Amino acid sequence: MNKIFRAAILTVVSVVVTAAFSLAGTTAQPGQTLSASEIKASLDKAPKAVFPQPKFEFDPVFEGTEIEHDFVVENAGEAPLVITNIRPD
Image 1 (cartoon, rainbow, N blue to C red):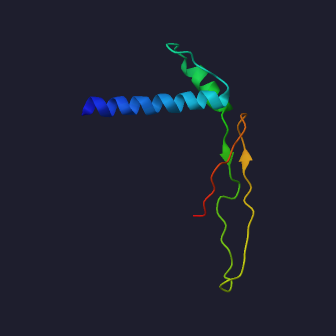
Image 2 (tube, rainbow, N blue to C red):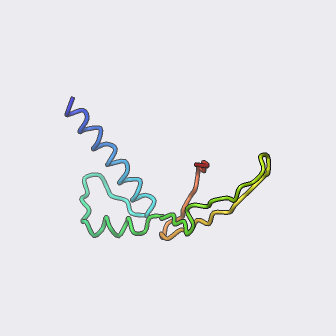
């Protein structure tokens, strides 16, 4: 059971690292070992969503009143930032 859990974790980590490198434009070949500085440089280029105003409190309104607020999202990374799913909290 412990070996299965460890293998599952290693698989997930491998997929996440591969995805990060793909987004940052760095690809590691199978069996290739990357240095810590190469990994850090690739992750520094990954997209980074920054919300200057992450929370907004609306004033009280009457029920049924339509209200809206624009949230600004900035990309502090070098790779394109793709937003695929937005949910109200």
